[in-house]
Image (cartoon, rainbow, N blue to C red):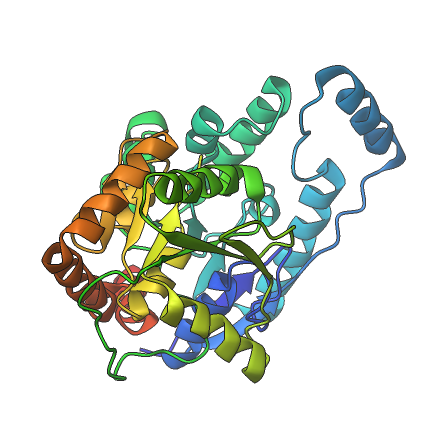
Length: 373
């Protein structure tokens, strides 16, 4: 079915794989593969008014927390731009990964709103905003959800919140795990599954935010393993830092540069396990990338991670806020039981081929959009 889709973006250009996590790019490409005519509205620049800039300074001084992600001027100006694009393009569907341009947008055209998680869910587990600013943004989000015809999210955790806390209809929710976001899908390529964990064990962490991604926890895990007679090395991708014994910072790789992309993929080829001890993660994309190479993820149930990583199928999902000692013991079990590790690698790769890729996700998405139209 031919469709005209207005793709609204606020911060990231969906034509650039390097922007954000790459999911903006992947949604855009999925629409193009459907044969849709896609018009992009945005990105938009947030230029707060003088009064709002003054307010933000005072807010920071007194609350020591973040103010709302967007200014009121941004909400209104982006909404006007979207309204103009609607009138000019006359789309069949409106798609957005952000609430801001939709808050004051009024249209009878079906709206698809994609979210990693809800604001409510994030605020419960990872406080960023002051209570006042959180409540302001929550009003905006509820307003957009009242207009939404299809909500796309990447975890059952997030879907449950939509139903229970927002009273959003379950039949209007589409859930699929966050697929890998790499420019060269490995659907058909053969992957060599290792029969045991290397000696020393090769552990990988991929993430840009040290605290939220639990880099300190990962470092402690490696120290615990080495101190207990289980040699291990850790590579940290996406950050700069001072190398320590058995710990190496690998910086950031640009996925659109062929040489850097290959170097990035080599990190997954090197790894025995991806460790993802995030303190909060709405969905997580790197476990799906690791699954391309049959590399299981050791993580916890923070946020929506228990959907991205299926326990005992594509990794091990520990209880939320598990200490480094639990991670270390879990890794020791896999070292001591090669057959368990080998089977986990096999099922990790199988899960990637089945549902953690954009070919599968794109088909699911297309069916939902055709039903909506």
